[in-house]
Amino acid sequence: AALGYWLWPIAKGGAVGLFSRVHKDRLLDNPFRSQLVQRIEAEPGIHHNALVRELGKGNGATEHHLDKLVAGRLVLRHRGTGYTCYFPVGTDHRTMVASPAAKADGARRILAALQRGLTGVREVAADTGLAPSTVSHHLERLRTAGLVAGDGRTGYRALAAPGGGLAGAAA
Image (tube, rainbow, N blue to C red; front, side, top):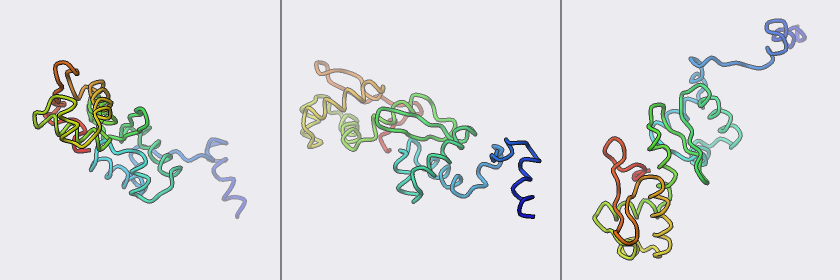
């Protein structure tokens, strides 16, 4: 009987039968995958390491289940420089691209200062308590991501993201 248990997958589907194939409709039957989707929907753009930390599973298990969810098109993944972020299906591309640039606390503080009408690097640095060089670094990343417009001569301003909000400002 024990031998039949091990041979049944081979008889049923050949050697391929040894590997489990979960249909898309059943992906969320797994409680951990369901938790992942709920967490991603609650915080679009959440970082991979935050998911590992908050849900208390190992990196390998989390990566495996996220891969299944991405392959099943239940969540979207965006890999930025130093960040892998996850989004609910339907998130626009611009928000996904901009999210990694707005993840750092300093970047969020700079965006908030720009929303309050500050425009110069030194003004923003004084307001946020960050060094001018740090402000310049974040402003360049935010400008490249499409969250900020301007330059050092004309001043900077925050741009509205799709949907009217500031992409990543609350991330």
